[in-house]
Length: 341
Image 1 (cartoon, helix red, strand yellow):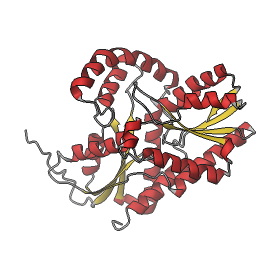
Image 2 (tube, one colour):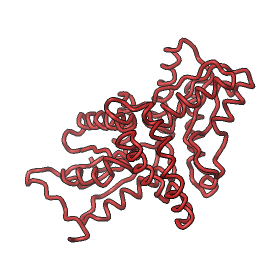
Image 3 (cartoon, rainbow, N blue to C red):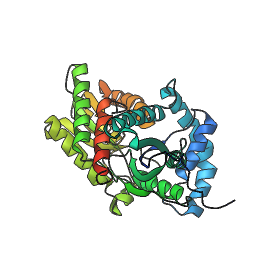
Image 4 (cartoon, rainbow, N blue to C red):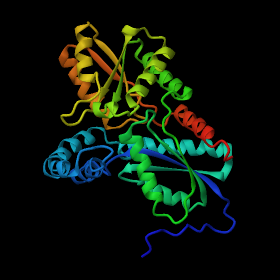
């Protein structure tokens, strides 16, 4: 069997097209122990995610983490699972459809859009195959991570290159690193928070919680922390918040290494000590709602805030498949297609 795949032969009248590949992190196929274990094995085997020597890491992964962690993770997934599947998968798919619809309005049939996951299904390789079989000759890759991080955006790049590396013919390719300061993204975030406050009938202290990364990554030059702070500065400026009415922090720590600070747990305790009893939490680093927002924030940290003495913690819904989200991504894509169309 040849190592390289043959170029997909589209029917003769098929026009040459541009492909847009949206990439998100991924999710288990179901909230069962085995599916969660399979997902975690793929995720935690990625060197971009765990940059520890394999002889040290693999015995820990296979001996301790994979037998035990899926038990807790599967329970957590079951708390948020939707009738159609994992929230991350459902919202990512709906968002992809809406982006495709908007690009079709602008470019007709000359642009095709597909969704791939770095881990799980649909795999990046599957999505690329589907695009190339539609006579895609130019490819734009857009990871759904507003802030660049090696373990997310970098991994999406790796998966794309690895998948393309098995094709005999390669499309001309562009890669979007981030959109942390994009005006459309900042405007959509601010509007989402404003709508949340209007629905609640009041403005409460705003916590902007981002997925954390190990401090060693930031020291090594990963721009994620700086870009996260840039996003926060832009959002609070748009909302006209003073310094005492918002908090910037990080969540989702894993293992015993040092992580960038402040962590959300410490931030909640400090806010209670200041007398803050009501919180609004938004998670700008997540394009769509997922385990980290719907379970970690809305369930775990809500309960923790109450135990600390707080009264109410509410989660701002992610941008998900909101029309504004599809529009800002479509506008971003149009800019990056400049010169191709």
